[in-house]
Image 1 (cartoon, rainbow, N blue to C red):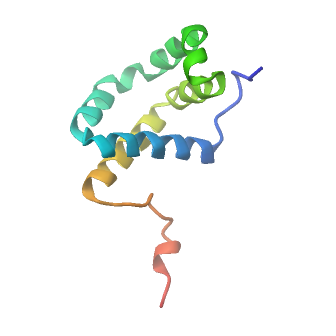
Image 2: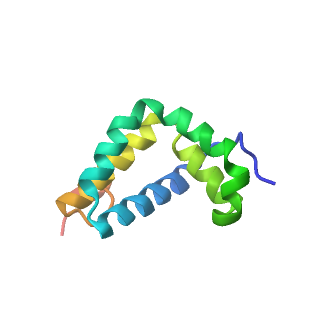
Length: 108
């Protein structure tokens, strides 16, 4: 059984955001996805709770752990904002997630 109260680890959160952003990028759905996410950003917590409520129906198709992680991802508006930024980065042609400032100042 999975702990529905446990927080989503940062590395798993980033992996899910990357996976969703790449899915959107491969299909060229940047604008519709960003528009949808921006419009529904105030409802993210309600959406996450709806996923939890419907988990009994969708878990057999996607797996209970995946359903839990997606519900946890959409609990916070900050995660939706991260997803929007990552989709925008991919649309602009940035292939890798943004590196930390210290990593970008390496000297050759």
